[in-house]
Image (cartoon, rainbow, N blue to C red):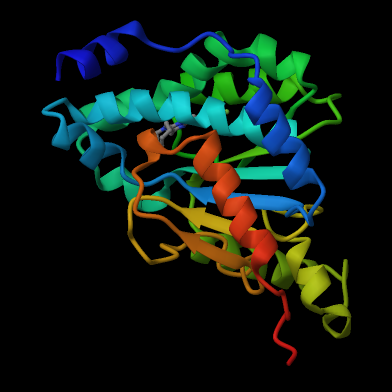
Length: 263
Ligand SMILES: CCc1cc(N2CCCCCC2)n2ncc(-c3ccc(F)cc3)c2n1
């Protein structure tokens, strides 16, 4: 308990240079097929804190450290796109003080990690609706997007104020408008064109989706995009997730034969 509190109070670890064993493991995984796009539902932060007698926000704070560990791991591996489900449209039902804390995390991330994001040439993108987010949160997102707009490395997507069903409805509304205005003809509509109306336009679909903390549900996350994705559900709670466990999920992905619905 004391140790956990010390860890929480100590805040974020400075960047660790990957040890030799991590470098070896990274090189080993790079020999096999890597997922181009990994999408993650970062679940279990509140339960992690509750189990330790800490406030829920302690779980979110610890979870932020895991966010950075996994960004480093994905970047070191050469994953092209990493999408992190940070805040769903359903999360607005949470207690006000928890929402206020969560809405400050993009700024926290910006302050703590922008230098490393730039050193790693990472491009930051937001998936979701800015409407409804506090101004300070939107400002932090805009600053991250602006600072990284010319970066060509890992595409880091934060799904924020995101819900897949509303994303699909928004796409349908925009397609109807474009047909009515003559911008497109109904006969042109196909899966590829529909995908271009989603927040994930121009991104490859996730090859692998990982959800932590034992829930075996998709929870209104990328419903259209995950049609052919490998799904990985782990009991580990997000704050306890790590580079090692991420690598284990990638190893599992490499072992699976991928059939895309064919025999
Ligand atoms: C707004 C909700 C939220 C929650 C959250 N958690 C809480 C939930 C899961 C655990 C991780 C910590 N994180 N972690 C990073 C961000 C973040 C978002 C956008 C951005 F541009 C930079 C960082 C974040 N955002």
